[in-house]
Image (cartoon, rainbow, N blue to C red; front, side, top):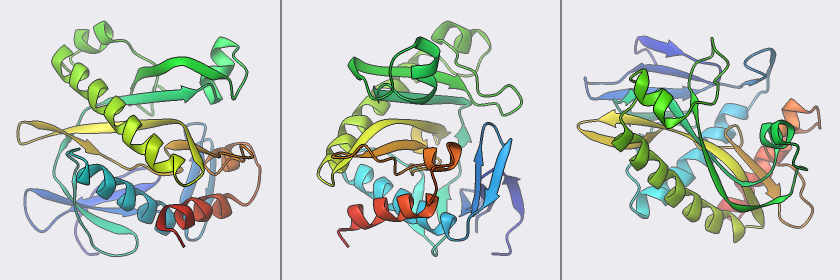
Length: 234
């Protein structure tokens, strides 16, 4: 891939596409946690994340969700619609885990009485802090109408993915999404993978996601590969 690099993040590289309406995204093998404080190269991680995310984006597109994905280029690269990323991540939680459990004193694995949605300010410098609607609109990150739409889309995506994973003996514990503005519409961007979701085995609660890296549980790629095997039926 010889296109000029626009941006390099912790887990992906974004390059210019063949025209002014597209980008090329390449997945890296880098694993990071705690805002980059913990970092390691895991050969094959980018290929696994790309494969998983591409399958999930295709499933969502088939069910009416507008996404940035145009086509898959190779094992680690995709062509996407050029979008202005909204600097607000939407977090959806179905079960208490991670920071939610720690912050609110709720035992990890506890069922929640309702689905939780949160917004975080997408800023590595600030540590991606939680932020509410009025704060978001006050500093101009998004309008209330955009936030309402993003939340509604996130809940629809949650229903679609939870059902998809349930058939494959996986619990969708929580996940985060990014959206972008593209030709007057808000579309789903970034990725959906074990890097951005908590995914547990439905019988054992074994973690199949980045918590294996965060918590030094071992065999990080084995968990990711298990997710890919299950969603492809192989």
